Image (cartoon, rainbow over all chains, first blue to last red; front, side, top):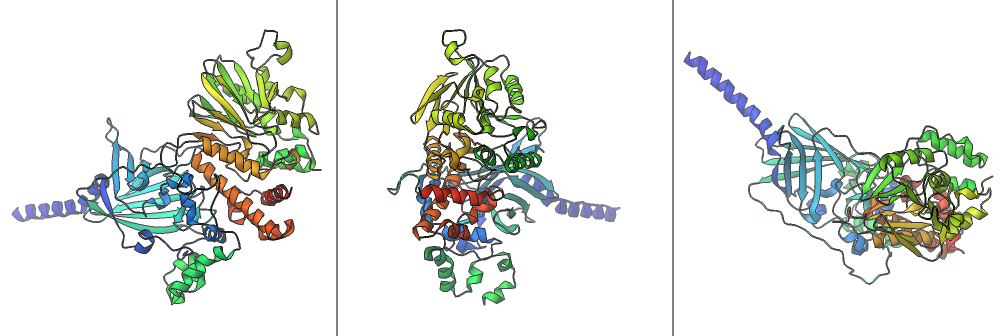
Length: 284
Length: 326
């Protein structure tokens, strides 16, 4: 009898241990999360070099957008307060806060709200099964997101995004882009892995897949980040900085990048094949 | 034969669902036989933008409707064939209210075709007075003088019943309706030479007309004196007026001539694109290149995937080139 009880308790305990992460995932995705920057830190913190398109599944149209992009565009008042779009925000800097919105009657999760401090990047992930808006609806930086759980993984689909970027050197995304994401917790619930897959029929040849890591923060605070544009340079209203098509300036980005790092120009120009692990042999 | 009337239709193509587009393209190539486009299945849908303003979509240009205690104001009227459905939707949104004004952003047939039907369903504030002899019955129809001149000189001619009853010259015209200032801005030669950008100040909504489309490049109607620089000026006017709530989002909402609702950041993206392409063409002209050489370079190619429909990038670059070479 004693042995039987012991066995039953062991099974219950084991079952509890296995079940625990599942329960934690459902309730535990909310909270404060600090970004782990070990992946692609050069791109994420100091920022990418001009003309570095390596590893991006882009087409020639995207390359030309990047080649002719000038960082001076960011001085234009209408551009100064743009936040990262949802297709980039989780890749950027700053802590992530996830809060739940609960239906007071059913106690079901209606939505998750995410907030990243830099430029107050806000998103809502609707969990109540509502449809995506019509084609006539406006597009936003966060887009319109709906989510559901598949096992312990939060699966999110986002549409209605504004035209944005996937790398901060002018590699553009169109407003036709969509985003599919997977959020899942590590076994102890202290590490959140975010997988994003960006699709864009205009500038990408295939979905662009990235992972981002976050670690749970027991105590954290997020500040507000108000932004008001101001004229920083005396320019004519409507002046748009850009390198001219077919100019040496437009070519210099990738040429300079490949020269400085002694890698083939083809690698700097990117493309889906440059994201393959075996492509490193070509680079070497 | 492609003439002014048929060219007007080019700005429409790419907006309808596929079968409508096919019908209209057929019209473009066989001539101005308007009745051959079957619009009977078109559904009209309405979307509340904000404040007193609604967006109605069916076939042709977007329709903006302002509703308040004093009645209804309608910006653009699509086609005669779809106007009854527009009217039906207005009556559903504003039961018992009288249509007092129709504003036309420009003279193209996909924006004025329903003028007579919408006008006749309304009543101007002059109705019943001596002024009725001048203005006639029905809602007042307001446009820029150049839009009326376009209608008056069009071949084939635009029926007199579609013409505005009130026109203005100069770069601005404004009045108050439904306790809201309504400002009409004229930016010179743009999509045509009679385009208006209309601002509903209290609702904080701009009706842009065809200087802004989320569906494609703007159509520069050269036969009606359109010019690339006026389109850029008009977009900059919109950007000057618009104020986002936060982080370049929300706040002033913009109803495009064709396509979806937008805010300032969307117009900025569009303005940047058009300015960059204009600058490229200007640069290539400065390099001594002719139109054929410039078309060979395809100076809009990084935007064509998003904004070109059919051969529209060639027409767009050609119109830019012609305008800059005047």
